[in-house]
Image 1 (cartoon, rainbow, N blue to C red):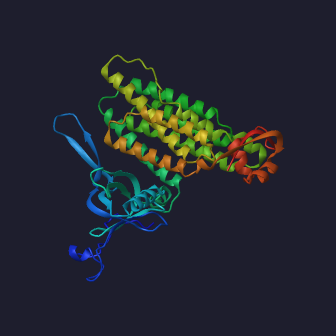
Image 2 (cartoon, rainbow, N blue to C red; image 1 turned 90 degrees about the vertical axis):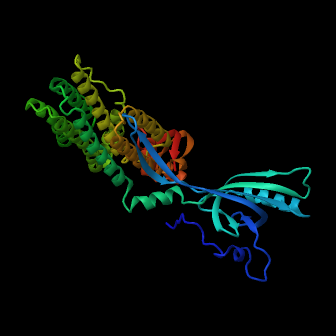
Image 3 (cartoon, rainbow, N blue to C red; image 1 turned 180 degrees about the horizontal axis):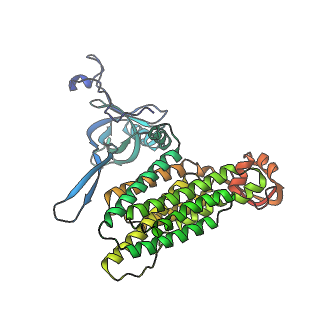
Length: 427
């Protein structure tokens, strides 16, 4: 990816020399050039370049404390003011307006050429043309442009560093896991009620067993997941009430469910296995996404008990977000509607997690970005729908629509794998 946010190289370092191509030439004109068109000149008056940094400023209690975290360099915007004048100014004015109407983007930018600045690749944001009756023969021009950057796809390739989105999402999920365990331990350090924690984590175990109960697969795979989940109650039975150890066991159980579901999918062979296991990922994802309002409803009288219950509920919702993020990165061929619904539930779940800790907030946002990139990379906007009146064989439809039969089956999830009818989604 070639992108340089630095200013363009000026024509000359000396401003007098910059105004002319050489000593004997006419003055250099300011121009705007639409993609694939000829430059249109105008008389330059003023230019304003705006930039800076995007900064996340966090405020804290105890008057006088705040933190600034630089997020990114702001996109540079250029506002140039000038005139179109002369006997043929109407022709030149209309030519400039038509040039500014031509679509511009990062792949096909326009070019703003200013004698003292150089040649900027730009995307047109707005333009204003003003004529005054007392100033015949000219009009004023104000154009606002954003410097061209890189397309979304190219930026993701650059940031991806050569590994797939799932690897990025999994890495961010692991960071969230570590931050959540650390935050849970800090919040309950010397302030945990052992009875409330034992009760809450016992309910967590039962809930996760219910998630496993909806998964279809080999008994060995289901047993491995169940054993990891029951490890939570094993700790409690041993008298272990350490917030860190309980949280680690909870996240390990969630990780084993995610891994187990993926292994079942990968090991499925043949039509029977396909139909038995195809819904596992979607069902498991929905189970975790539905935890935005999860409550343990433990009896709480003292402040310590209420704090323990509140933090336990929060760590369970965080665990659900952790698992949902990893599963979303592994979704196979979701439809546009499905992806939209999943994302709405993900946002709701995310909103149910306490993000007052700056480190937790950062980890949650990074996981959100990675998951969003994965969904956006699916090119869901390319989906089309065709209504099929009479039942038609799937292989025939795949040939007729020009879509791979496995892709067609995954997008539509037909009850009968051999014939399809109604609204058929394809790409």
